Image (cartoon, rainbow, N blue to C red; front, top):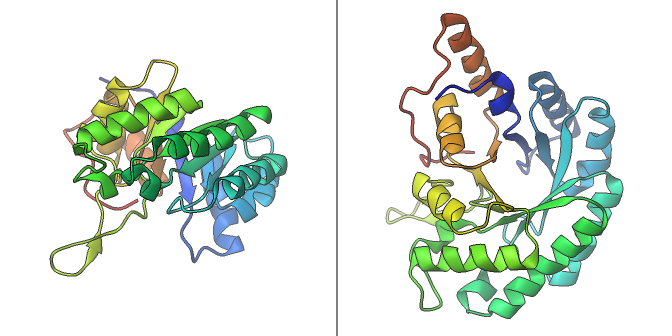
Length: 260
């Protein structure tokens, strides 16, 4: 299936989250997001106010991460961080669940944690994406298989008011058998599973492992409406090249190969 440039560009949340990014890097990233007319930038909380100024009038939204990347802040800290981000101009919030509480089967805590952020964001007319960090859930937990665990999280997040469920942060590194750390990020299996286990009013976001245009198209085909990416320019430049050649459709790429 073919999609327009806008169909695909408006899926992208351009990620500006690497720990070493300078103010100049963040400004350049916002300018790139405006140039390619993506949906939003996903930026660190301290940079929200400045990003709002950089992007004023461009049509690109500003999103902030909350409890990022490991979700371990106390609920009130997440709520207050959300309040501050929204007051600074964020209209989308990407929060991380408390994984330890989920793996402990403290589902009431998980729901209350997500609800606190959703309620605060919605008071400011902002929308919330809830990050599961699926790389940490490959073996399941709390007496559930991996898929059962993710389904449980989908249902809890919808009850708590989430506007999206999201696969990953892009920083969910897992120790491998050789001692190195790596991650997969979004996978086709997880995107299909998450889309099937929330109602149509809840959207799905992919993050991690989507590094080229074919991967972005695959995400769209699987029913996700947003995709976190750092390879925005490469993906959309490829679209323009294919458009000029008359072949903008997918060529069989895969997602979930690592990298964000």
